[in-house]
Image (tube, rainbow, N blue to C red; front, side, top):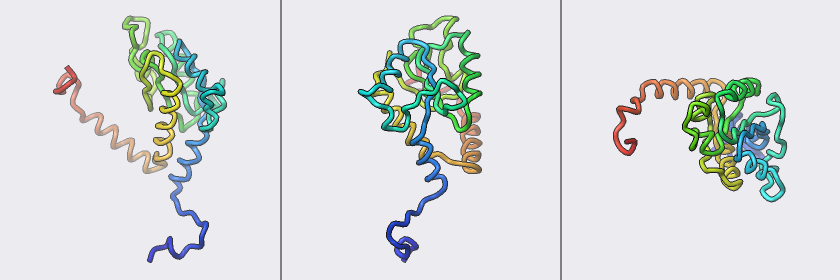
Length: 184
């Protein structure tokens, strides 16, 4: 006989991490950082037809100090990269980054000296959204997947241990040149 059977009806058992994750996922405020054609699809997502307000994201913040999700929509030029990093640094923790579109994810068709070949060279990216440009439905799906990641995220010492484990795994990983299979 467990504790659950001895509690009166209407009592909810959870962890602090679970409750905190549930609250954080339902109150994401994205920062507007539209750089190219993907920004129009991002704006469409906030419009009444797709209604991002259903997910607690109705307020696209113009100030990075009030945002916790940066949606990088479009190509990032070398001149814009320091500005992007400064805005990211001004955002309060915890913060997440979504690279929207193939240009933000990998430079897209712009393989030249002026475009950053992936925004992950400038800021850490939590979610990549492919497409040129990705449809609003795809952005909504990325929101839901990011919500799931946020809800099941770790806090405090558990988060630091997870980060140390991931960093150790990255340092011991084989270089891309030595990998076999479908990479070449």
